[in-house]
Length: 402
Picture 1 (cartoon, rainbow, N blue to C red):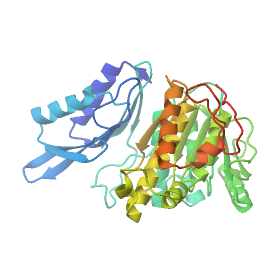
Picture 2 (cartoon, rainbow, N blue to C red):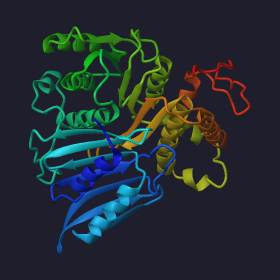
Picture 3 (cartoon, rainbow, N blue to C red):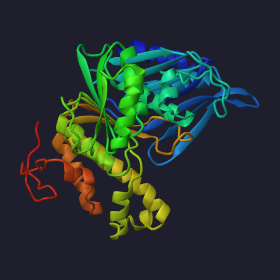
Picture 4 (tube, rainbow, N blue to C red):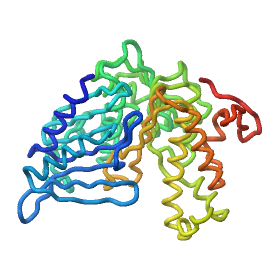
């Protein structure tokens, strides 16, 4: 639902100051504006002096934690955060969840859902837990997903809910899940989109033929074989017709995420949600060569080099997607206690003001670190600052489609 931003933020404020608040996260940036911190997380904490509002902000270098008593101190801090030009708010209470995304026109896309099941398992602080698809849904029994996978799928669906417009476009919505594996996300996305009133036509792609047969049989069992189909093949070459509107990729390993993103760009998909898994490619390149000065200490220890490689890889992916005309948010889609691979690249086609500036930023990064990301080798070349096509890995100068 589209609303005025001021009215929507008033609703967010009420939830943030409500005793029913369980967790809230603000992240991303609005068009032509950037908040003073890259991320803010709010949650209630029980202290000896009573319940306080804990606010953790991160400016990109280190987190800062404040515990504020209820009343004027908490209200002032919340008002300060709401004045920041964050692009996204995710607010959970004991009774509902609110997802707010600021559009390029400065309005608010808001999606709300209500609690339908209590979960008082370890780590949930005995608070009511909301699921977009109930974990006791027969769907999960049929596909065999464990509790951890159900949580990841539900968190991914929440990110999807915050990405798609409300109402959804009329007519068929073509979806592909690349590297679908056991198809937990494939079936869950289909069920969720049907519940939203969409007409999804879903394809799951996995390299294994036995997975295709298993998943096809499940589609028959669940009564959705006419709308959910499976293809055995590589992410790069599996036949998918027509080109999808929405591309999903949950934990495609290493450069398989790059292949999924490249295929999405080639299809000119309207929306892309990719949660990367391991990041070996750039890490291996960093090991083979000295770091540019003065960054040697940054990658001198193996664990630091691996973590930096993760950050560099996904930074390059996001920047390159922006150069190809996608608005990209890099967000946490699930708490790290459930999986350390909790980063999500959420992209929407269109609305990039200066694609060439994004390309210059990308070139500066890869030139300084002397790396060649896999995604770069899979995409057609973009024009450089002078308007000349930059050769791809094969030496062919190709200018991308507008």
